[in-house]
Length: 235
Image (tube, rainbow, N blue to C red; front, side, top):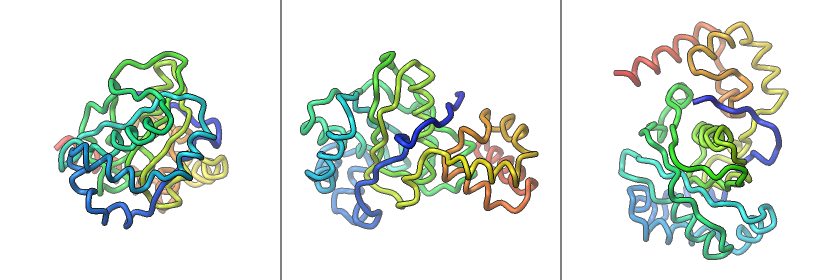
C-alpha cells in the first residue's frame, strides 16, 4: 500500500475522552472484544451534546467510516458503536463495507511494530465522497494514516478523524514541516533506505511516528529496529 502525504491541519484528530476514563468504563472490555450493544453504551457515555455540536459544525454530510479491525480479544466493536451514536444525531450515512483485512496487532505494540506492520484495508470507496474516520484509540496514528491513504488512493477525500481516546499529543496527526525538517537533518541519509523497507518516505509519516524516529540516536539503531520488527512479524 502506498501512503499519501499530508496537506492541511484538518488532518489532526479530535479526541473525546481521557484514556483512564474509557478503559475503566464498565462496558469497555466487552465492547473491545466485539459486543456491539456494549460499544453503543460506551460511546453514548462520552459522545455528548458538545461533541455532537463540534461534529455538526466541522463537517458537511460526510460518510461515517468506523475502522473495523480484529483485535486479540476479538472484533473491536467500539468504532461501530461510535458511528451508531453519531448517526442517530446527524443522520449521516455509515459505511459498512470498508474494513481492515489483516490483524496488525498494534494494541500495546511499540512504534517499530506499528511502522512496519501497516493496517491494510479493502472495500468499495465512493469516488469524490468525503469520509469521516472513527476509531477507538490513537497511539502514533499509523492506522489512521493507512486508512487515509486507502481512501485517497481510491479517489475519495478525508473529512476528518474522530477518536474516542488517546494521549493529547497524539491528536497531532499530520506531520509538521518543522518535524520533517528536523528528521531529515538528523537522519536524512537513511530516508532512501527507509522507503525501501516500509514503502514510503519521511513525508508520509505521522507527527508521532516522525518524533519516534527522531528519538533514535543513530541511523544504525533505526535500521536494526526496523529489521528486527520485520523479522518478528514474519516469524
